[in-house]
Image (cartoon, rainbow, N blue to C red; front, side):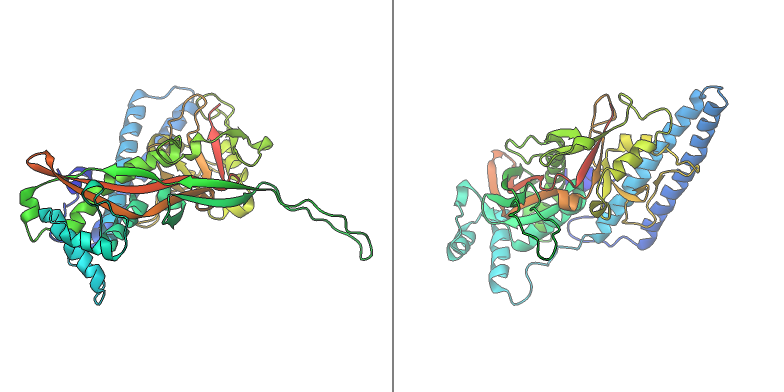
Length: 426
């Protein structure tokens, strides 16, 4: 079964690999209207629930059930809008290849197409020999054309929530290293003729981000490969997109750094009042596994202002959909909902004016959980990609299907510990 058949929401038209239909703008606007109507219904029902609590009559179970249904519809409408926005922004690969005039790139694309369809690797061997590549031939596969690699990385930036908001570097080696300051250089004020004592220098340390191997293994029938109309570049990008995005998303959040990137929740933490470089600052809710019963929104304000002003300008929230559903019910002191749906298609929902990134790998609200993160992830978290996407064709292991063992190398970790703060439900 193809990626297009498994990941598209219901009632959204499927796109075959042979063509790239452009979804009309009216469909995205319709999805945005559905989301707005669902949120209006959610607010009305939640207001009724809050009114029952204030009257001390107890919440009607029917009200809770209806609110849960509307909340689910709200999530579905948001998912449909996101899917339409991503699909409309995705350019076709059919006939794309390399820019005209780039003979080597066009030759690479043609040789790769022949390798995928028929297993003929002579052309790719010759090209990698010309490029003095360290290709390992049948043992390690061959590099995909540069256009396909760029498209896969672009799609990952749209589908992998942390990659979409994090800083990114492309490297040619196995690890990315950089020096960071552990302390600011000494400085001070002096009079015109006063002595200038020597000041302490800036402390430096090195952090490294090794690129770990990530793989996917899509399968195709020989009939699909023999069909000359099928765009195999687009097929391969579609097949590995979801597998890579899901694995990356979890690793960038909770990865332990062993054979995978180190997620920001895997680093040591400390109460924000005692924050030191090398650890992430925490803000507690003051209530185990929940928001405080009185003025629950205040802890979100505390979290926002735990971040220094220079980071807040480009900051945003990260949480999963269940945490977002709980936060949707919160209001400020004037009775306005803190969470707001996206104003236009392709833009995120906001919480107190800051964008919300939905990441399913974030933990649920529970005792001592770190269910909400806030910060400037562009400066705080770094994703490192090693150039090159390899494909090994395997027609033997799963007959009658042909497997394509596809690998890329990616790393990640926190690069600025002052740029990310966490909300702990404790």
